[in-house]
Amino acid sequence: MSRIPTPGFRRLPRVADRMTAAHFDLVAQSLAAERSGDAACALELHSRVPALHLRSRHHVLLTQLASLGDHLPDWVWARWIAYQAVRCEDPESDTGQAQRLALKYAIETFHDDQLADCHADGGDPVQVLARVASESWLFHQVLVHELGGLERFVDEIATGRLAEHAELARSWVGAPLGGYQVGASLPGGRLRVHDPAAGSWLEVLDLGARSDVGDDGWVLGRLVPSGVDDLLMFDTPPIAVPEPVARDVAGAPQPWTRIKEALDEGRLVERHFLRADHELLTDVLSIDLLRIGTAAADLERVTAQLRSGRDEIPRAAFRILRRAVDGGVRQSDASHVAAAVLQPSARADARRMLVREGQYDVWARWAALVHEPARGLLLDLAEAGRAAG
Image (cartoon, rainbow, N blue to C red):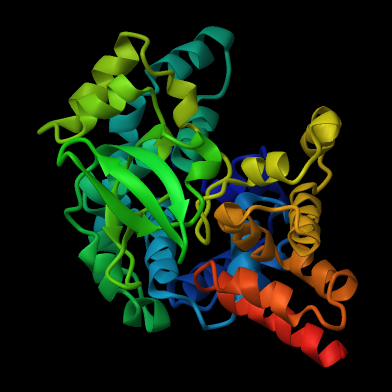
């Protein structure tokens, strides 16, 4: 199998041709910094390579992590570790070998139509591999959990602060894949989730999963410990599916067989499992943030501007924060406010344009409804409002 480009390269054809030996050294140093848990250093080194797209998803995620400093909740560390396991290509490592096996399985089992279409059209199959490696929720789940990518990465590659914060990630090993119904958001940053296999409702950490599936939507996902008040959480934003599929997968001894059957029968669509906007800090996908923060009359125009290369996500996030200050966001949608404040440039714009004297209580009320790291960022805006007085 050809070498698989990392997610940061997937939209940059022939990027290696534009890189010098010094650039490759910077990439290696950036990767080492990330694997030690130093997002700020990794971002600084990554930004010094001209050929790398500064709007790539990887660059965006590094920017978000670096803006938070070292004060990350354990569940963010765990998601970051899982994300790095997905990106690990080291050919001599067990993690890299597991990645290649998982990619082969995902292509042959779930995404074979894409590769067939590519060959029929005379395209580059490496680009198909790159897209699946970067965007396939199915591939990520198989690698991280079924083939032990998460545990392998912690054992052989994670160093420094990343390794020091790996305990929660280890507790995710063995968590089963299931089908669930996403219910209402509750006070205290909790989300009701129905487990049809157990026949009961759970309260889990509310990071915004409702934004993609709505109330009473059905999803595939994996519930794991969050390290917050004994609550479970989704290990990564779950995938919306029809109710019959979710019920079939729930409690199934071989859930992947059920998913494959649903794909073969047309009850699931393969491309719906390809998701470019990978998230670590929230379950609100970037495209949903755009939809939530944009008036319906403007959505088509703004989406077109996003596709043309304009960075519309932070602008949408700022509009959500402005509506939150003006009373235009429901308390049950506090996870949207949390996702918005986690956008560094939107947060900076809010501090400059939305923080006013006497607004401490406004921001503090939102902070009380969400979890770290968004809670601390909203409290910072509250304190800025107090200082403005």
